[in-house]
Amino acid sequence: MGRISDTDRTRNEDAIRAAMDRLLRGDLPPGGRCDLKTLAAEAGVTRTGFYPKKDRDGRIREGPYQHLGDEFVRRLAALREAGEVPDPRDAQIERLKAHNAELKDRVAARDRTIEELTQFKKLALSRLAAQHDEITHLRTVRPARLIGIPRGSTASGSRS
Image (cartoon, rainbow, N blue to C red):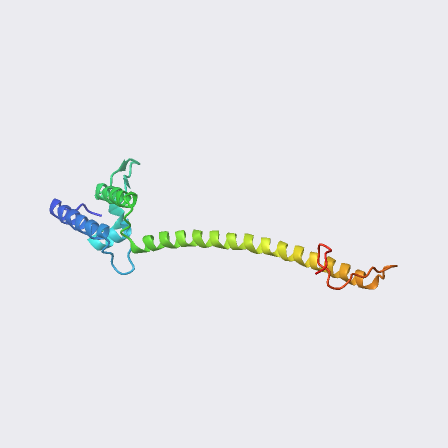
């Protein structure tokens, strides 16, 4: 592949900067993301220009637009640290992750409540069964001697 002229390089760099500004403002093309692939497509350059190259002798040299790719990545990271997310899909992913964590907490709390209520139900049924058995037993047992309580007496034993 041949080298490009200085005029073409300058024109490509201007196109990359313009595309970079659009993407970082959140003006994304349909189906695009805020990444180097979309940046290259929007600027009309190949994506490989943003990455280092290996010469035939094994030496690594900087790609022709690598400095712009690095600038894009730095600016994107700064926006994210400031709490701004230019890519609406990334923002949606973050919102969904937070919502998912909230729902997991709610489900865990409900599971604990259900477990507590299940234990309470078992205890209540056990007590009711014991009380029923006691009532049934008391109905079948006849005391040897019944003591009658006179009518009209109060709990303190005085008559009115």
